[in-house]
Length: 128
Image 1 (cartoon, rainbow, N blue to C red):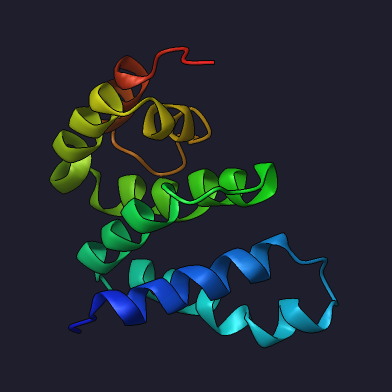
Image 2 (tube, rainbow, N blue to C red; image 1 turned 60 degrees about the vertical axis):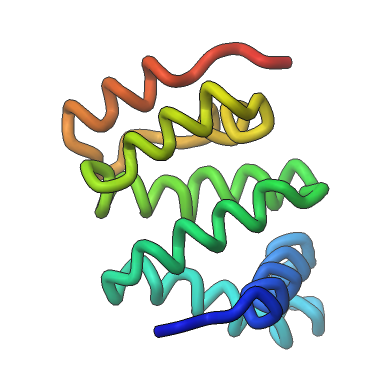
């Protein structure tokens, strides 16, 4: 699936709105399609779209709630399912960008291999 930046930004906007909204609120339901789309990328073996989503979303001003969901959802899913293919990029970004490193601190092991999990832990450092 090819996705341009405008389409990606729309998904990020809707995902943030859905995750920030209270469950049951109109906006939560009307924007839930974006949450579902991001989950589908993990389930349907589309890691590059998932990675692009993460790279776009984490740079936004996210609420604590949306940040926690981004770490424990898409980023954790990426590392659990596609970790060996993405850990180099994750480590590189964690060193170069304190905001991404902070996000990485919200990731739990889930289904990561021993090696990927060890590298995630090693890449983390206290930034705030």
